[in-house]
Length: 240
Image (cartoon, rainbow, N blue to C red):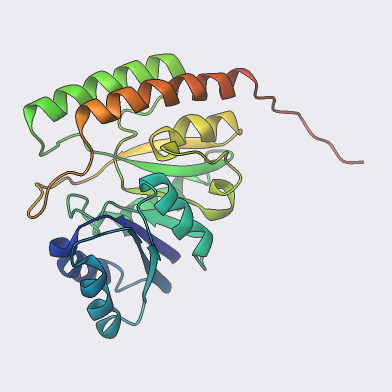
């Protein structure tokens, strides 16, 4: 396994060291890996904690946005900087379990023998540890998105995913694109499968994304992705 693990963070100083230790432990059997933290304009002690972690972990790299550009841009920055052909992403709040990364990679390798053009294995938080309101709002959003886009993905909001770096970089880039990756991959001719993953309560800090913010931005982006899908063409190519 040669894989780059991209972790976007914004004001997650209290979670970084423990999460990094978990990632290193989870990747102990990997042939080669790197951890890329993208500090998306944090104004707490995130930068200081990351510099401390750099001295302790050889596989760690840190990239910083001078100002916050959002989670999708942070992920895009990390993927562009990655050295390996496979990418794993996970949220920086510690709710995703790094131990799931090798398993998702194994699922990718196994299913890739049976499916044409498999581009991504998406984590599915089928047993979530969130507030009742957040669970309800996510369920509504996932239902609406799935019906309108037909992406057949039960949980696009899960930060834990394994995918191909080169295929990701072929996708149209826009703010908040990370919420629509399965639909964008299907539009481009790739395949996506979902796999249940562990989900944990947040132990420190607080969510940086409000429900109403996600709702209004999500409606605009959803209309944009529908527009992209309607104008997509997938040619059947033969070379003589």
